[in-house]
Image (cartoon, rainbow, N blue to C red; front, side, top):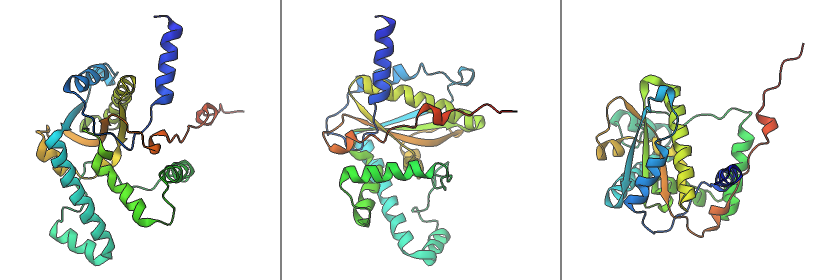
Amino acid sequence: MSDNADTGTLARLLRTRRSIRDFSDREVSAEMIAAILDDARWAPSWSNTQPYKIAVASGGLKDQIKEQLLARFDAATKLQAGGLPGKLAAFLTRSKALPDGDFDTRFEYPEELTPRRRATGFGLYAALGIAREDGAARHSQMRRNWEFFGAPVVLFVFVRQELGAYSVLDAGIFLQSLMLSATARGLGTCAEGALGTWAGPVREAFDVPPAYKLLCGLALGWPSDHVVNAFNPGRADVAEMLIPIKRG
């Protein structure tokens, strides 16, 4: 294969990969999952430490984790509706509705980045036909994060805590490698930071080494024909990324 063919293929994969938010019920074979992971394991990492672990759930185990996560999401929804008294009661009783993730998935976006976040959110809901004022539909769509958008497989990514931000960086490179491998095989993926909100159900299902912390999840499967999967929020121009040289 020529260099031109290689670069063309890579450019196509990078530009056509999407965050899939609706999957078909077609199963993904164990051999396919193994092949994708075998590709991704060649991702570079800090001193080749490969400071991450991957938990793979499908079938009944995936459904078990999904139901537990949905129960926590629903409990958290009721908790928020209860206002301060409800939150205080949950804290005192150590309710499972309270996040128990290793990283805080709730934070304020910097003002500089907020316009992109909002544009993506508004565009996504528009593609789904959800009106801005339709709180119930927006809530239902948010809930689908913990249903893995109907994907038959979900991966949970854990990172070694001692390397701090650098283990997270390495895990990100690993995930990009995995997503491109999946895309090349016709599969779809959706990286989900939301799946790091509650770690309990995942730790109950897998024998996770104590030093590893849950970073995020990744839905994996065959994309459905739903219009949402064609949604493309675009990317900033290269010029917007570059930091100018100081003058004088």
